[in-house]
Image (cartoon, rainbow, N blue to C red; front, top):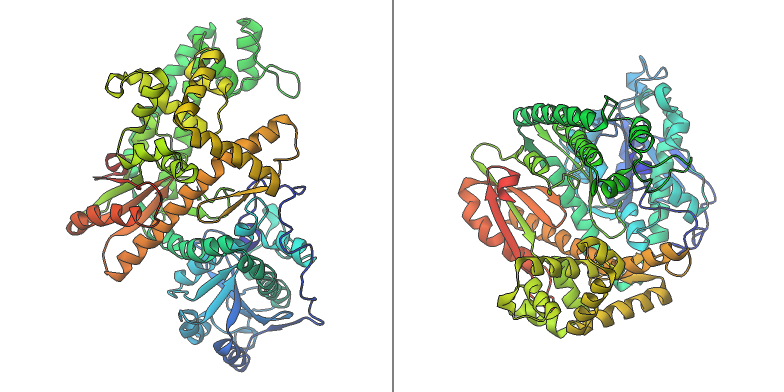
Length: 640
């Protein structure tokens, strides 16, 4: 609804020219319906007739039209339903366009009356519903006090599990799978500044658009779901992970997280002060004032006046001043380092300390992020408005932003994350004897690796050697080459190659896994997570050198990232199930990377500290033990 169905889940590198599964061939396997019947429901008798039909139907396609894309602010304008392809209805409840004025009685039913009549069906967990991005519609109903249940299918998630790298928007799916050009939101409401709200649309026009959405969603479901069912792993991921976690995510988004606006205000002021100091220092280093936000002026000073070496050029041939270039130059010159620090602080200030307080929902006093379930190709969640995944944790200033995420009175923040999850998954997938033994015996795996690579006893490993081993352990999971490792550790390429050779002597199973995975990926075009999630690699056999190498690195890493994503999703489902079954006051408030964040009443703290890691470690049986670490505090930074 409100264009949310259409826009949601686009992106994710959705190129047009990718191979990968046809997702149901180009056209609907079922022939298009002979005739299209879309009805406007404007009387009680018409609503009754549709209620009788949906109350007995095994599956009903449902969609909402609303006043806003913001799921927590959106108000319901109308509901569309479909049970058979080609047949659908639209129930307008809050249009206020020219054709509606003074026609309240025969123009449309009231929102209150419609929701009162539909509530029992909407809230019935046994009445199956299918939709496109139903997490959004669930919020819309919740805004009117209705708890949407019986969400059994979601076409956006079907598209995602079949081919995560494609575009999952409804218009794009309809064109690709049904050969159908749907009416776009822009065609109905206009674009840009002149765009009007859906509630101002003529009801007859609104019916064509909205009823089509419900009808097309049903047809997409009939096209894609048989393909999902036909693949055991994909079906498991859809049924046991994606569908249930979307319901949990809707609850987490609704819970929101409490923000200490005053603390952020103070941090903004400090960042501003620090930026002024950096600006002065930069003027001194440059010998003149200039605009630190202007790449053109920076270029003139660095390359025109100071004659620093040009690292690379932009498309137009001017010397580049991007992040990478400044980092390279910062190794030898002070000004680029000042510019980098300035940029980092400016980003923190504009993205977080200035913006977060403005994002607090006035009704709840909390910030409610949106979790994108179909954005990342690997199965990881994305988060927007605000983006919680991007708060930098490597810098002191970044960590301080987390201090502003607080618990309400009488509560504490509890954070739990998996320890070394991707290395453990590597041990499980590769079956490497040494790696599995390290984890089974609870050894420090980085220390064990260092001992092997540097040929010293484990207790003689220095902290520097352990750091090298850590970079190697994680680097190789990401398919890092000797060249990449050398750059990362600041050592000669020969030395890096020697370390990698020693590593593979110690962990031959890992070397074997990497070779076999590259091979499998080339043969079938995809790799899988432990649970059967498929990750397609369109460039694995084509593309130029760098693109193919990128696809090979992804082939090695995707099963680990994807499995980690699957595990954290299974954890969220298990935790939510426990909290609801036992009627606890604890709430899940965030999921960031491999970490779950909860807001816990003081009285439940001891229980949660024991039960949470237990649930997380038992969501799956791997060949090595899973370990989850728990921290607590009055804010997120303390708990982390």
